[in-house]
Amino acid sequence: MSVTKRRIVLMGTGPFAVPSFEAIRAAGHDIVVVITRPLPPVKSRGGPPPTPVRDWASEHGLPIEAPESINSDETVEQLNAIAADLMVVCDYGQILRPPALASTKWGGINLHGSLLPAYRGAAPVQRALLSGDQETGVSVIHMTPKLDGGPILARRTTPISPTETAGKLEERLSLIGVDATLEAINILEDAFTKLDAGQPLGDFGEQQDASKVSKAPRLSKAEAEIDWSRSAKHIDCLVRGMQPWPVAFTFAETKPGKPPLRLAIRKVTPIVDKEAGADQIGRLLESQSKGEMAIGCGDGQIIVERLQPAGKNEMNASEFIRGHRLEPGFRFGKPAAE
Image (spheres, helix red, strand yellow):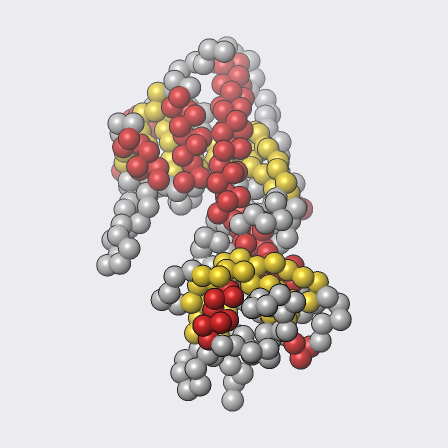
């Protein structure tokens, strides 16, 4: 199938955008510029932060721009001068205002990691997991000034695995989004070709149902603290939804008189037991398997399989139990206020 070569502006920063951007490049479209976020300061530890879209564009010799504001008069003038057919936006990090959206012939499309109108915002993949959803997907919208509110041109759905983390799910959705993005470009191609031929543009895409809108605000570190009084399912969803950042955590007061040790919880197995007692919540339980780290929760117990003490490497939870000689009844979480 031949593809009409179109002048396209790509806007993105994170890894979610790369597979679709590569598909657009491989299809033969003219990528006139790749716009990404400015490089953040280099931290003293850990080296420079990852820049997936910038790295991809550099690898293929594509022109790169990184304006402080996509909506500044200078940047909009530059976009108008480029006179592109379309902008494709994904995992960019700035909200485009009407002048920027109007700088290309067809406006812009955005690949979003949810089944809109559910989970509008910055963390749709994570919020779907935190909510315990069994299904999610991607949506490609024709952009409007309202955040994630434009008509839906294409969507794909997929079940969520009961062991999937947000990082793994996001990676999988980025690949599912490739076909949806190319479909959306073809839909716009057909619509605006008719307009150029003197036919009315008409309505295209599916209008979002305002009554079904839900929000997906950015995650915070505070949200990642485990409340052991919650259900086993809730805690399991928290652990999976908070990876790779900010990672679910709890505390362990392993040395009397010392500050409690922060433990990042990486992998758990939830077990529901309606007979679990309130006095067991947050307590290390007698485990069925020797050395197993079983912690009581609101409706059962959580088997912690992998964890990472602050300043240490990730380890099996059984190693932590043995290393600190913790006995059944040991309490996890912040010490009770005196």
